[in-house]
Length: 253
Length: 99
Image 1 (cartoon, chains in turn yellow, cyan):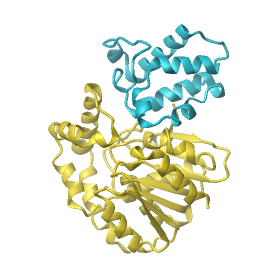
Image 2: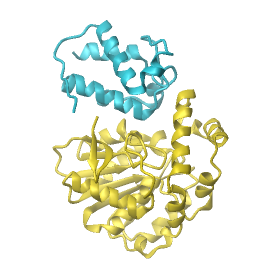
Image 3: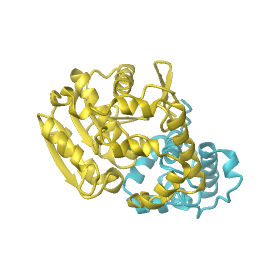
Image 4: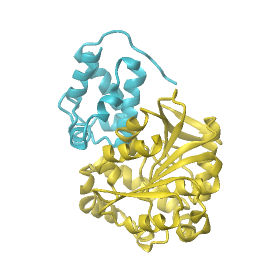
């Protein structure tokens, strides 16, 4: 099991095609893990690139940590991971919260990021996103699973419900994730977004409630292309091959 | 790194036992004791494995069999419905054919 130590903390990583000349790092979203890429998207990209996936702190199989969920800390983590893997500069893609990490990384460390793909990054200033965190309860999770996860077809059994509930309880009540997210509410209007120098691809679901965030970014980032794909916020799970192929074309050319 | 590349050809019963061992290591003995794992057991519905647990399971297969079995590549050709309905017997058959 590739759990490596980065700055004294266990980080679960998966790599494909380590012999490739260029590296592409994939960042997953909040309350998710690297499996969002592992089965379909990463193998498509690994035809051309050394693909690195990692679990964010307290997610997937990475070690739990009580603090440091703001974008500065999350990009410090990514920068430390690149150092640990001896990667000077990489292509970077992120989904949802991972998209925010990718944007921040491109802004903070432009010399380390070549091209940038952002999938369904939400606007952290949108109250609806933060309300979910504030209103969390077991009942909320059960309601959410019953009513909204049907777009991914994956039904959660009792053991999974319990596992997820424990993860949410930990993140919401024993970490700084809530307060750290509030700190980021002005991120989309910050000058650093407009100053992102890399060529960027924005991928959003046509039915996504984050589509307006994508359109906002399209108007802010200088060298950017935006593509809308059939689906909602869960588009990498709904359309993994389309997303993988679009990213493959973007990063390869 | 617990890399054990197996070169001995296993029959379907031996592969089934090995897969059951991997499942136990991934989801924990306390959960497996409550289950009746069979060739028909589906990963998501019966075994209630989530995607990161299936990643761990895939890695165990890679570690054990090495390059002779491209398990992740095989999974990557499946759509979501096929992944959700994937059962242990299908995996045992695939591994047996690849050896």
